Figure 1 (cartoon, rainbow, N blue to C red):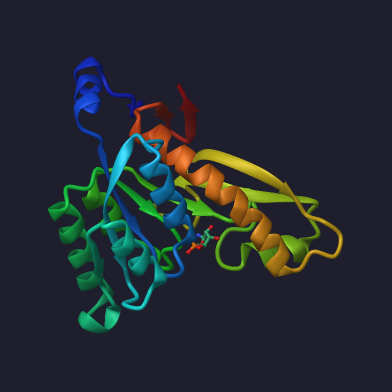
Figure 2: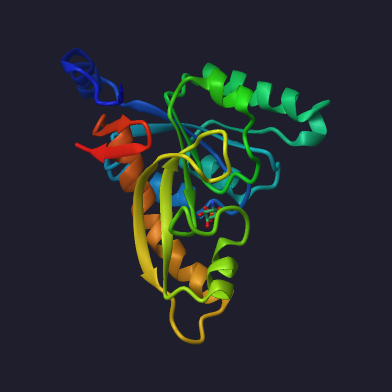
Length: 217
Ligand code: GRF
């Protein structure tokens, strides 16, 4: 059993120093912003110490800059392969001494090698109630399927696509006349509530994980 709850000694350490959280984001970074706001309110049980992106122009990097968080761009065009790109990201996250990695709209599937090498918890948020509607355009998939409830899921990242152990979920209704945009906006509001809360549980050592089963302590 992998227990992420830290012992007494680690608890004392957490009172002195907060968990160092890194974020990877490809785009607008609204979830990053929600994390920044929670951090500034002291609600994250951790500090945001690094924001990386695979897009130089990502709004997420501007948000990091404004919040005073060290940030870095790792566009594929600067590297000879995806493997080299991932290596550079990993090296940088290690230099920043990141202890938890949070994916917030990071549009690359991280390789098995990256996930094995990083050796820290990696979290993601997905805009559906997993295991339904994995992959891209989850909100459109939900509408096309005709479900009446959708939502978002925070999960640990494993080698599959949106398939890792589930940490937390929040449901939202699918309303008659919903479009992809209106449903996405409703789900996004839930994401902004749920992600900081779930990251805070992990950073605060309040999560016990036994295989697929994740329990909040
Ligand atoms: C969110 O819908 C998230 O669930 C998905 O990518 C989107 C990122 O949005 N993984 P933002 O960049 O955080 O605004």
